[in-house]
Length: 211
Image (tube, rainbow, N blue to C red):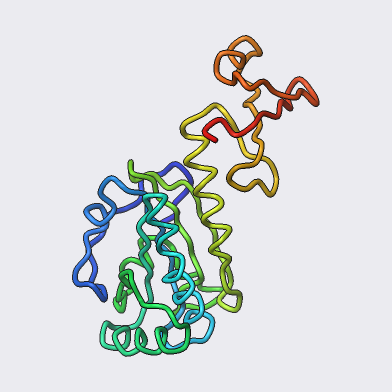
């Protein structure tokens, strides 16, 4: 199954370190990040899960729930959690799906046979409260993810959902944004009372409107 941006994220029910999870019930009225790990007791995954635990307050601040996945059984997950907490110095504070039957991995196309026919790649899905897929990133198993970047994209998605703006290259929360070209200057005057700098008719830069 191929999942694309704007698609409705498929629902599932699967065991986790915090009991059975129905994905739609888990999301509720929140955003969600679903991210896969190739295997338990692997070094890169251990660092990633520890860092996401450290970042959890940042996700909570943005109304985002995080949900990990690995294709190993729940008994292995339970042992691995202890290793993560010991080596990374952060409490394991979010659920990790036990996808031993590969049902969720296959549903979300997380197994790429030319990379490995058994292990998942490092997939990331950001899903909004309407259950729509808003971001997909796929990393190779050998490369740890940048979760600060994932937070940055969530900031952009949440901002641009509420205002007629786009975020420029390397944008971070609090920096200037771009007024979308579809908005006329007259409409922009009403929406952006702080004004803007027009580098080109299609490139109008304005302060972030909710700051």
